[in-house]
Image (cartoon, rainbow, N blue to C red; front, side, top):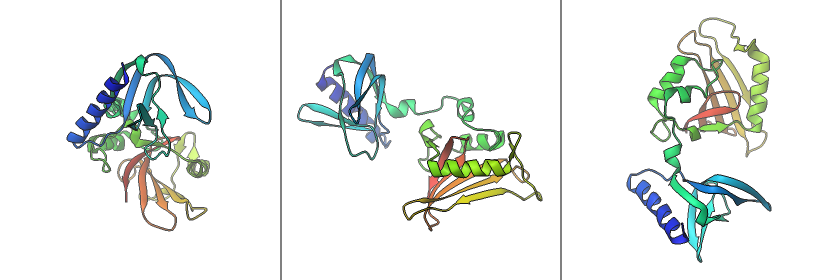
Length: 225
């Protein structure tokens, strides 16, 4: 594949998604053999599949950007070795409910609640939940979750004391104006399905992002407020 063919293919994917009112999630390129890709700070990585968010053409070179809000771009590597190009949204999906459900720890959410998430879809983008909707828990969140589990976990289960309406809750207050107020709230299933919510709000403000605590490493994005 040459530069002009690659550029035309990328442009057609972008135009097709825009025409269908689908925001371009990015692009996935497969190479015939491992190729060296610059990842910054004078480091290179051999890849056979490359995902990137956006591209542009300048002075005979196709530049790509890995992060949606990234400040820097990198030259597209090894164009003659490109074998296949596809929209990232085509790969960013769960083919079955079982694949989606495997992302969840049953200590936090039960089958009924997981099924309701699958059936309802995302309030944020309006479609079925995607693998990219699962976000990695940050450092402050990991510290809060560790404290939460030390306080309430016994033999792999969360223990709730009190009446039928009791639940567990723990908060982390932002350490600076640029930080986030984080909250974990676990409902044990005595009044409805067992479910665990995760809130990340701007410091001192009741606005932010709202999630489900899926497992000990990831949270599922529900919506922004």
